[in-house]
Image (cartoon, rainbow, N blue to C red):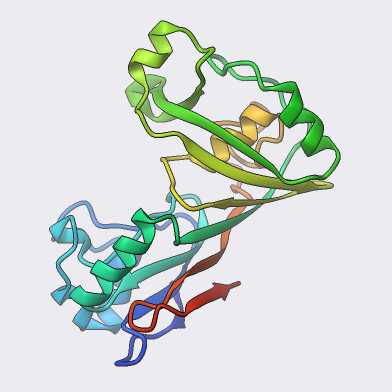
Length: 236
């Protein structure tokens, strides 16, 4: 079951909710009811009147992987959706993830070498900005791989043109990760690339199995209020 962190109102035309793991964030079509958005719309039917980029997703601002639990934000009006989308485009919508990690996990197939400078910063417990392009990988493109300028022509040809950045700080087995623009599996893939794969991550941690629980949570969202522009934050 979802948990409502902030309900929509005239003053706050958005919902912040806590999505559990194993529940998809978004519907695949208008008839798909097994997802966090639909569960929220049952409580707040006004969400169905919002016109987003995808008709079936209405005012959903972002997604979480099905196995990931944590905070989602849904606009409750067209005006709020437009304002929050603009905040995302301007790099003002920040999401923080907390992960329990294994140490020194091996580099998976088709990952480029991880820069020594970044590795040293992470070992010292300093915050490090990891950046890369991404490309789909594996059967059905179900995984992603970081791509850098040193990855070679074939990988560079397959990747997108956006450079994605993940700010990571690791203390013992806990990784705190911040992003303002996200790609599918971005944080999980970057942590695996760094040698700190998330516990229970059957896609990016070679020690995990499909039955393990992914220990990865979207713990905080921070963004300008759609009506006042005051920066607000919600945390678990």
